[in-house]
Image (cartoon, rainbow over all chains, first blue to last red; front, side, top):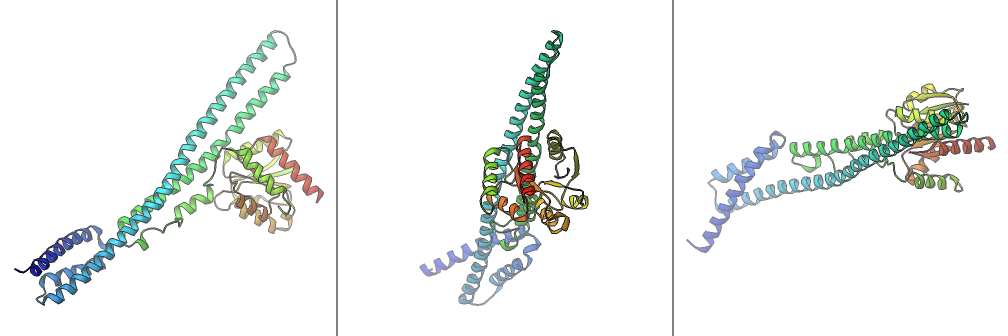
Length: 233
Length: 124
């Protein structure tokens, strides 16, 4: 056996191993890739049964490799797109959920502080009544302010609901992309392109502000005031 | 003065209505989205306070729809919303809102903006 024969045998051996792997992958992909699978299967059949000479065999092998590389490239692109889109949005969602948790805790603590102060004022009013003081208006005014403060703090419910609503939309989007990748091999139909909003996210942003926050209300209002008071604003 | 308060959050509607009551405005009609608000909108409404992000019809489309009506061309409108990036604020101004309040707000800020708006509309 010449060195050239050994090289050709090695190429054939490697090719057969690769084709077996491709067949395995294709059978996992299901019916959605039926046409591509049947094309490659046809080549496998040609390769294993065709009595023609080596030149034709090499041609078939080149075609097969081209198909394989196309399939692998599609898979790589789909995975890359999914990873990039999913990771960015999941990170953003994670931050939103952390902010929901923080906003809920801040609001709850502030409300508890208000309730504590309000209870102290009720004690003061009772003490004043017991001492015969007939003008509790100063304390009752402060008590009213505390109760109004509690009501204002409840705005966190609307804001965190928007944050959760958007996070839910992102999770639905990631789920759709994963399902799309599982069903389809071609990245063009795998559920979206990089940077393009899916229906889930678009729907979520109609009713929810992606940037909703309980933080920095004063500086954000200052920006509004600047725009509305600027000439032409 | 009769207010129309539009927000899909019942909590926020209640907070806005309570704030209005506290600063002396007791006549309020409520709506949960732009469609409901348009249905409730008539010549008796003298001031509109609307959220931006709502189902069915959002605040921005609602404002444009109101401005397209004869009886809505001059009515004072304040947008009360979480949206606070410059582009959004400019869009709201272009759609025809007279003033803009960022959530979470205090009753003092709401009163200030209502007073400003009424002053500006009265002066116009």
